[in-house]
Image 1 (cartoon, protein in one colour):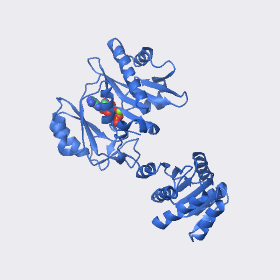
Image 2 (cartoon, protein in one colour):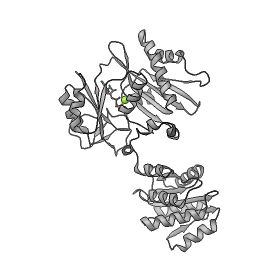
Image 3 (cartoon, rainbow, N blue to C red):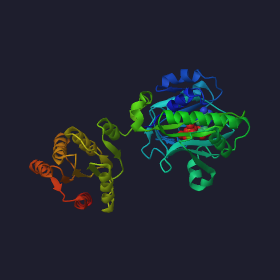
Image 4 (cartoon, helix red, strand yellow):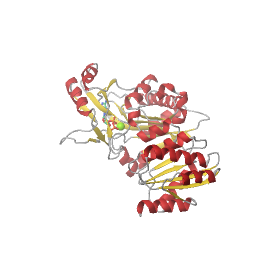
Length: 397
Ligand code: ADP
Ligand code: MG
């Protein structure tokens, strides 16, 4: 689960990390009061979306020369005007994809003077099964370019969970960032704070880019991107309240309400499968036959008819879906339940694209009979290969 920059900064502040003063607003008329609560002489007006690259992004229907989603203002009035300009518009960055994201909140922040922009991140490294630090002296808006062309400028190491974090790790980050004197001490305490917050809140990723050195030699977190392990949300009700559903794919949101493992993809073939492994195999074989999956969907083991109905509705609501492949290997999941779910969904929302169904396993005969007797225009498949071939043929001709 992702949260906004301003929420991440509030959390960092509560742990004692150095962040600037700032106010979040959702309405243009509140922007002037919010900016007025800070002293200036510089204000930074920042679009809040769950995507990075805002500074270098652009708004849809931007006027010539118009700036991106992070702008500097020299007065309260200018800051308020910028907030008004950005609210409700669609910001496109290299992380949002061409569709962009609508800006519903603005963060107005105290402007900082910057001597150096550094990069610092903590993440769960699946390879080492540990928390890793990633640091670079080349922080700021070009970090992707650094990662691609100058990877030697990025330092990474992990923390052994048995011995935990020690000052040594903080010093290692400090030296790889080229910090000296009092900054090393600041860095050691910052690393402690970030690591503590990361572990306590079950984060998946915490990225500070840029972490700056101010001209008077202090460290400050100028940007913060934070994501949490969704499976740990039950023990963090405080974090769960930070969820912004307007930032999420509506199909994924609906799926999460029904406890379905669904991920939207770009292809044309909707898949309804039980079991993550079979779902992956189904996606692979669709690709093998020359088409692309529109989603990953695992309806799970003990899905009810209602859950299956909902899953089918989510798939059909995607305008990119040109055909649907239902691939079920009934173990705990019963084929007749799947069949009933599919039919009840089709009754509700109709079926405008070809549907191939492959059923195998528990109650397969009952399942097949239900579909056959429904009078629906369903193409039956004998096995996975047959199912994939048939749906790709039905879609691509
Ligand atoms: P993004 O990573 O989405 O582009 P950032 O928050 O990193 O957004 O902002 C982009 C750039 O804007 C930063 O690299 C920094 O140079 C500048 N910036 C951001 N916040 C401030 C601030 N409070 N004061 C001064 N400059 C800022
Ligand atoms: Mg940034």
